[in-house]
Length: 456
Ligand SMILES: Cc1cc2nc3c(=O)[nH]c(=O)nc-3n(C[C@H](O)[C@H](O)[C@H](O)COP(=O)(O)O)c2cc1C
Image (cartoon, rainbow, N blue to C red; front, side):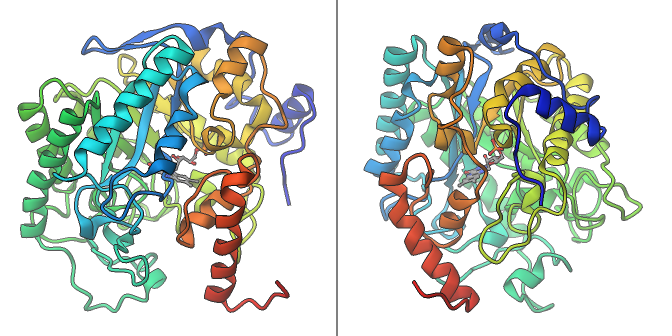
């Protein structure tokens, strides 16, 4: 098993050479690049090159509004000097929630969201010296909808020989209708209007990780106007963009896009049509070109499906309970993210791209991130699990020129475990007072779910 084991940068460099990844992943100790502001095409100033990635805490109130624990999570980013905070997956409909504690934006909850944005911006201004750009991720969980927390209620765009097994879906399980998708356009529009009223700077029409819109992008086998050729598969996303940009012209329109599903064609997006696991970046490039026409000034790039093949999207040292060890060295996962994002950034040099998958690098994250930014492989670096573990990491990079190894994420998958097993999630290792108990409960639930007998 390959785990993080680098006491110094030379150890990391040696492993990069051994794995023949030294062309794809480099190292720099010039951290000044992080503090060069970016000005988006719409005029928005982004003060640092660090973003918080969307990270769900599954801690909403039952009505979908942010709870005290949600406020606490965002307040922890206050001193963090983030140029951008990409708020977590927030459902646009009750039936679209992946969990009864997933945030849900609607007419009766938007005011609580307004307080959350206001408080987050104010605290960041006080503690970091500038306000971050705040984007809200709007989602329909599609295949992974489970609004009551107990029984999955999948809403699928097509049948998949790979993914149907997860929920044991029979072949005659109904596929979401075109009519439902037509209506969803206005549902997303309504949510975008509420996000604007709440004070968000932008909305992400979530197109990643194989939730509904991401699954549609891969719906080559679906008949009708939302399936088959790429133009049809991207229709819902494009038409939502058209409505949102028309009706909310001040809002930044963007998306978090899966550029590569790691599921063979015709069941994956961004895949070589030969049915292999090779990438086909013509597909994400087409989506980016189409969305640029609506003035999209920034994009967040990610890959794969966290339920089916988590090592692609979240390089880890330890899997969740019952899952296999990573089938590849996690550095391969980090390198795949960096080189795929670099190809997209080279193709769209004027469009700032936020990169993903850096948390596994622990205290050497700033060195690789600085190199990736300096060499124009990416414009901003997003922190996912690292932001849970070490919410003020960029502050230490600014003040100390390094990260504290005893505060970093250790890619142990415990935050994912809690999420799978229905508790409030956060960093079990570095924020144990808050999350050790939910983890214990999640672990018990996982053992019961998998029929694992323990002495606990
Ligand atoms: C607990 C948890 C919650 C997450 N929530 C979201 C989410 O709401 N939206 C999203 O697009 N990705 C979500 N992700 C994925 C992360 O944003 C990120 O892509 C992933 O963790 C890889 O980046 P990292 O190496 O910095 O952690 C989540 C991941 C975890 C572990």
